Length: 241
Length: 321
Image (tube, each protein chain N blue to C red):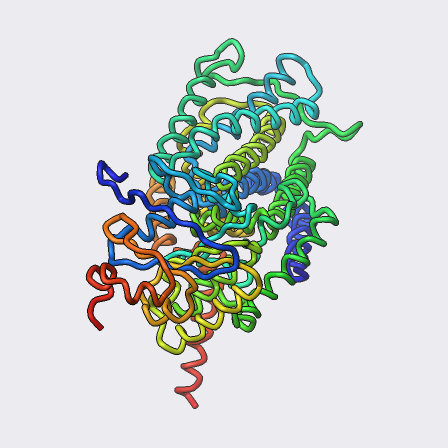
C-alpha cells in the first residue's frame, strides 16, 4: 500500500523451475511493484513469497542473493563509476568471503580468491558478449550494452531465478533479438526467468507462461496462445490487433 | 598492480629522504602535521569518497583518540603504546555503536547527525574538566618511545608519524582494491543494486565508519604524544569541515588524493601567513577556485591540466608548421 492506495491485491501465482515467465499489463498495473515486493525492496502489508517452498517473505535483497534470487532494473542500476569488469566482480560478492581484515592485509587466501573472482567475472562478460569492454567505465557504456552488463552482473551471483524488469526497454530491434537469444541461453543453463516486458513480440516469442496484471489484480495467466485468445486481456491491454 | 607498487615506493623514498632535504626544524614540524592530516583524510575518504557517506564530525574521533591517550598516559601513567591500542579500539567500538543508528540516515540528515555527534564530543572535552582539563587543555603528555629511542624531536617524530601514515596509505590501498572496496564503491553508485548483489550495505557502512574512526583515533594518539598537549580547540567543528575539504580538494575516492589534499591544506595557511589578516580570505578564494576548476580534486585536475597544456602546445606547433 502506498499512502492508502492498494497497489496490488490478490495476486497469486507460481513459477515453475527452468521456465520463462512474462509479466505484462498496462502502465500502472503494478508489475514493477510486484518485483519490488518479491525482491525485498518494498515490504508488503500482507501476503507471502516462497522460494522452493521456503518462505522468503520480507527478506531484504542482500539475504535473497545468497539464496539465488537476483533482479535487474527498469532504469538500469549500474555501478557507473566502476569498470565493466568490476561491476560483474561485485556480482561475485556473495560467492566470496574475504573480510575487511583479510582485504586490508592482503592475506594469501584473499589474493587467490581475487584471481578467481576476476576470471569468473570475465567469463560472464564473455557470456553476454561484453568480453572486450571489460576495462571501460560502466557509465560510458551505450544503453543497450548497459542492459547486457546488468544481466552479466546478475548472472555472476549464479542465481537460480532472475527477475528482469523490462530488459528490452530502450533497445533497438537487433539488440532485442540478441536479448531474446541471451535469455534463452540463460534458461538453457537451468536458470528460471521472470520478466516484466512491454515488447509483446518478445514476450510471446520467448515465454512459456504469461501473467497479465491490470489495476493491481491478476487478470489472466496462461500460455502465450491462451493469453492472446483471452477476451478480457484483449479488451484491457492487447487491443484488437 | 605493479604501477601502484612503484607509486608507493616513490612516496616511501621521498619520506625517507625528506629530513635530509629540509634541514630546517620548522618545515619538519609542518610535515609532521601533513602526516597526521593525511591519516585523517584517508580515513574520512574511505567513508566519504568510497562508501559515499558524509561525516561532519570526524574531528571527534581524532579528539577522542588524542584525549584518551593523553589522559591514560599523563594522568594515569600508563605506557603510551597499550594506551594507543586501547584508545583506538575503544573509539572503534564507540563508532560502531553510534554508526548503527545514524548511518540509517542519508544525505543531509546524516550530515546533521554526525555534526551533532561532533558537537557533543566537543562539549564533553570542554566540560569534563576533571578528566580533560577543560578549555585550558591537558598537558604533560609523554613522548612515545621504542626502548631507548625516545621520539622527542622533529626528525624522529617525522619518521614516527610517517611510518604510521605510510602504513595507513598502504593498507587503505589494499582495502579499496579488494572485494570489500568494490562493495563500498558499489554502495556509493547504487545502494539498491549493491544490495541485490548480496552486499549487506547497512553493516558494511557501519564497519567502514568504525574503521575510519579507528584510524582517526590512532592519528589522535600520535598527535597527543608529539604535541605533548591537547586542547578542545583542535577538535571542533571547524576541523571536521577542514577534513572534508581535504578529501574533496584532494579528490574523492583517491587515497593519494587525500595525501595531496592534506598536504595542500596544511601548507597553505603556513604560506599565507605573509598576507597577515587577509590570509583567510585568500585561503577561501583558493578553495573556491579549486572546486570550480578541479571538481574531481587535485589528483584528477592536475593530470587533466597537464594534458590540456600539451594539447594546446601541440596545436600551436601545428599552426607554426
